[in-house]
Length: 310
Image 1 (spheres, one colour):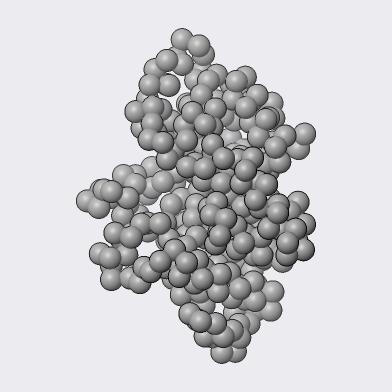
Image 2 (cartoon, one colour):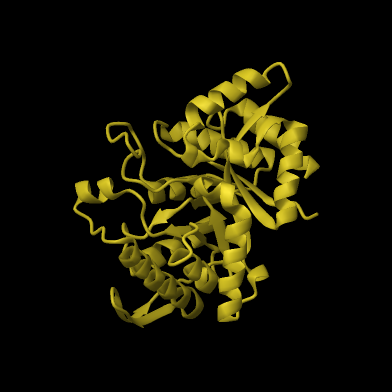
């Protein structure tokens, strides 16, 4: 069994830069593979709460670390023109020495678009714009030049230099499970498919759906890294488990977080067993919310009691 990439998801709502930098450096010191931020103009449902901008924060973290990969789960395609995004991505890949992972989605919070005066549209329209962005990014990374005419974007002979450090490109992650719009984009353009927390109860069905779509277009489904996003409540011992379970249910008890579907509540051995099941299902990347927002203790337990045993 090959060890999956283990990352932690750290939505930056309510954190200072020093808070996020400390956790990122701690992950790097402990050998955790990746750290993931969210991309919202404010914390969903909490517009008055402090929340740093996603790309600026990722740039600062990558400039102050040496090994860890940083990405977003996921960038909102509505926020940045695809040419600008391509330039941002190649530049940050250069700055970081090839440690950027490029997560991208069609947008999820209508309210922040309305407040900012940004275009929203139907899910079909947002998915179509995302599909054109993914085509533009592929061209930018492969050819270091964009010449594209679509329904939503037209780009004429635009150079993208310097190109990315990573070849053939920084890994492109597409998140979501919609079978009509999202999974076809995954099958055509993604290097990594991320299953969000809200879909953890449908893993087998969604895996089957993606494989079927890949077969229809002639893509080998094994060429796509399977990624999962899940909440983990990791306890140091059995005595601490009830309190940790309670905190996890308080913070992540909403159905959308899939806390119980994930099955990642327990001490180290139980977590290892469950992650092993996910690896056996084919998941090569696991991105974890922690019950306590990445405390030093929990990151240490993850590094010492879980990762070495996978």
